[in-house]
Amino acid sequence: MTGQHHRRHSLRLKNYDYAQAGAYFITICTQDRACLFGDVVDGEMRLNEIGRMVIAEWDMLPERFPNVVLDVFVVMPNHVHGIIVITSTADVGAGLVPAPNGSPPPNGATTRVAPTVGDVVGAFKSRVTVEYVRGVKTSGWPPFRGRLWQRNYYEHIIRDEASLCGIREYIANNPLQWALDRENPVNVEAGLVPAHDGTTTQNLATTRVAPTAWGDV
Image 1 (cartoon, rainbow, N blue to C red):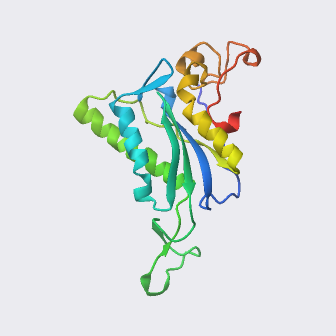
Image 2: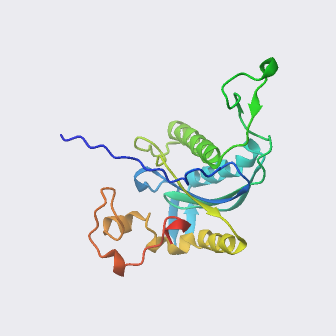
Image 3: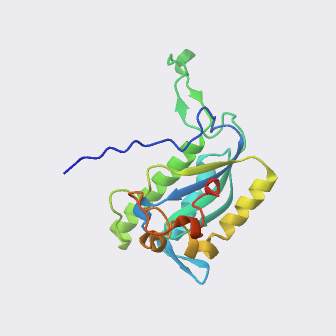
């Protein structure tokens, strides 16, 4: 068997401070586009017990990160879209880390730093995974293969009110667009979007498929 090595490119903006105050549009997908959170029926997302757990974990993020405010959020069969707002870079609700130069602060104190978008997303993914594993063991939820979430995620920095309004509308209308969604496994199997190996069987130029994230528009 011939081994393959895939270089993973960063989806983050180089040199951008993701802990700074601002609004961010986040998309997180399940591994292998596995549809685990429910079904879209007549343009409406019908959540199963797992999907409802995902919402509960999202709603708890401000308790773990007091400088994070949640905006619009939707759970789809195999991905989630949401807007998080980091309100301040002040010393609130963050983990404790050593001083930036690596030397311990006076009297053994530590420096409290604001969470980054990656910290928030990582906490969400971790908590959902923990609760999912518990559900597999106690409630008979279907096990996932390997990992629950894709390793990376998509984010878009929201820079103005017009963009915010457009993204809110996009998130709210996501269930209505499921038949055209590029994360819909039906579209992948039909070759309407690139498969995991990058191949397609249809002409993408003539096929309208909804973007995964706002930055794909």
